[in-house]
Image (cartoon, rainbow, N blue to C red; front, side, top):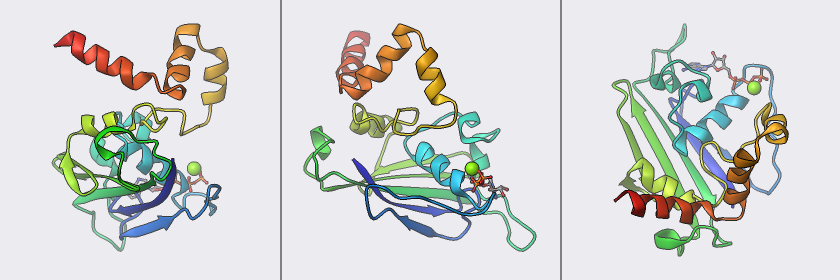
Length: 183
Ligand code: ATP
Ligand code: MG
């Protein structure tokens, strides 16, 4: 599943609405130190439901909101939208028929989060459900950050199994079974 574009507004250093397009399967983002390259990756993790500020290189969940500069006042909300290409039909279930899947998250300074799937408000869990098994969760292997390869090589068999089950598309069924058993 390919990420086609990302639209950021008020997120970290992206104070003005900015859309970044990824027109092909391999794209590079280049720029000087501190220009916001890693902030784009943080934004992808954040929309996919990341709920740990530490994993977003911040201390609190509202640290993702543009905090102001000498010339600009702080933003009162952060918003990021990802648009995925679903032409290969990787997403199954309710959203299977859509050729594009848009996922959006906003947060305001009171830490109120709102999530959207193809423009309609939804729960964080709905986003997790749609992407479970596609490798696109907030901590999934779609994002390979520094240190993750050595973690993988050194992981215990039961930890390795989690990665393999996600790659094989089994995790979505395991999650449903867990939900049913807990009812
Ligand atoms: P490097 O090449 O060093 O890895 P980078 O391009 O990955 O750099 P980022 O880490 O994405 O850079 O961006 C860091 C910049 O984002 C810093 O200047 C930091 O002040 C700014 N930044 C982070 N959070 C916020 C925020 N909430 N408000 C305003 N600016 C922010
Ligand atoms: Mg960086």
